Image (cartoon, rainbow over all chains, first blue to last red; front, side, top):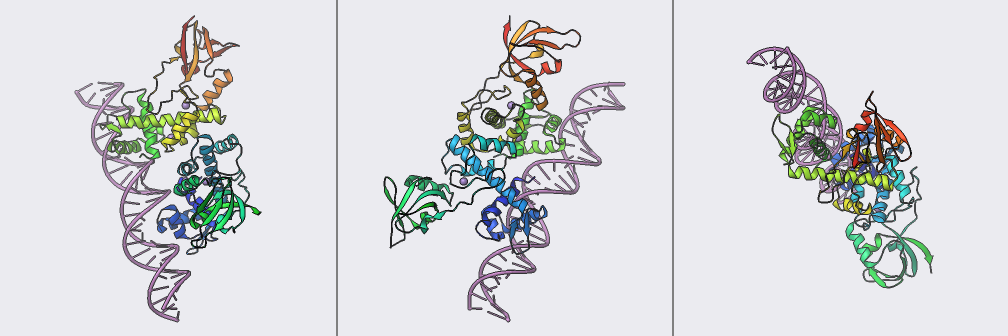
Amino acid sequence: MQSYTEENYLKTIYHLAEKTTNVQTNAIAEQMQTKPASVTDMIKKLADKGLVDYIKYQGVTLTETGKNTAIDIVRKHRLWEVFLVNKLNFKWDEVHDVAEELEHIKSIELIERLDEFLGFPKADPHGDPIPDKNGRFAKTQFIKLIELKMGDSGTITGVSQHSSAFLKHLEKLGLTLGKQIHISDITDFDGSVEIRLSDKQINISREVAKHILISSDGKN
Amino acid sequence: MQSYTEENYLKTIYHLAEKTTNVQTNAIAEQMQTKPASVTDMIKKLADKGLVDYIKYQGVTLTETGKNTAIDIVRKHRLWEVFLVNKLNFKWDEVHDVAEELEHIKSIELIERLDEFLGFPKADPHGDPIPDKNGRFAKTQFIKLIELKMGDSGTITGVSQHSSAFLKHLEKLGLTLGKQIHISDITDFDGSVEIRLSDKQINISREVAKHILISSDGKN
DNA sequence: TTAAATTTTTAGGTAAATCTAAAAATTTTT
DNA sequence: AAAAATTTTTAGATTTACCTAAAAATTTAA
Ligand SMILES: [Mn+2]
Ligand SMILES: [Mn+2]
Ligand SMILES: [Mn+2]
Ligand SMILES: [Mn+2]
């Protein structure tokens, strides 16, 4: 059984490992909003428990057990987010902090029944995949909007930034999950992207385009 | 902002204060499954924070703030129990431990929306009243089944014991909330109670009868 | 109203998760 | 390949929530 804190470390390491193979102390510290010295302490503890492999000065990797635990927390986090949005009418930018707490409730029964109650959803309100109870989920193949070329089309199926400011901005622009988009132009001057939606034409900055994930329908 | 632990102490003190006016250190220790010395430590801390009034050797009472905090936790606990039973199909004997964790999730928005989602329930699965968001709730007037006389009738509206063993037993006997009962006899030998339900006749021990709460329909 | 029993507190410590400051190792630059 | 910069670890404290053992206060019984 892990503490609330250990679970958060495992989850953080898991997410960082999606980007870089060996996860560094400082990266964990930044993500966890704590100090590198504290991270070293915790890493040793997790290593003792067999949840991470650790060689001094060379970062950490999750063991099989550690990874499974992390995935289980991710599963809970995302299921709770679906609950908050679909059942309690929260907005997609309001759910993260509460899910951050709910993910630590320890009851297998609870999460299985919640999953069923929600109709076994495959993705959370931000398009992130929800692992099933065995920890399995499809590694979805997203393309960043910024990588699309002029004339490309696709559907918004995720975001890679969960800050409330960003999500609120997308909502205001009408760029929500499931929306069909078409790249009508890429501005020479600043690289901003001109997008055609079903009902309107908008322009978004490169910075915004970086964090929108598209499932491509191919060129058209 | 209180810690998880402080909240549990406040809730425990609140419940004990429903029975005895001044709440003793040992009583808190027993309820919290901890040692009296630890309770003394925590009481001092709660007193420093203005959540309890405390005079050495004379037990504690909740301050107004302390009481409001406790009631808020009770509200959360009971709303989550309703959620678990009504939405996730838990049995009434399975919800306590999970609610014990869920009650500490800190989000006013969450609990208000949950309340609404559940249809603003007035009582939890055990018949205990749910405070509204201002902490108000009717002090329900229950009579213990054991206090009824032969010939009395009433409706089961609560239980004063939440152990899984007791609740499962009641369920098996068909003594669930809302059931109409009629006292057909009180056995001379052991004081056990003969009860007529709509469809059958059963006999329960004094021990069981003590913990069933009845809203009396008057004699008939 | 003493003595005995019970309750409560104090004193002194432990373990978990932090922190700051300084030392050590590694990586990058010159 | 040094020097400089960065990253990481160690050393030593702090805070929270516990604990045990012993002392002090209160309550109950003789
Ligand atoms: Mn968390
Ligand atoms: Mn999400
Ligand atoms: Mn609790
Ligand atoms: Mn209850």
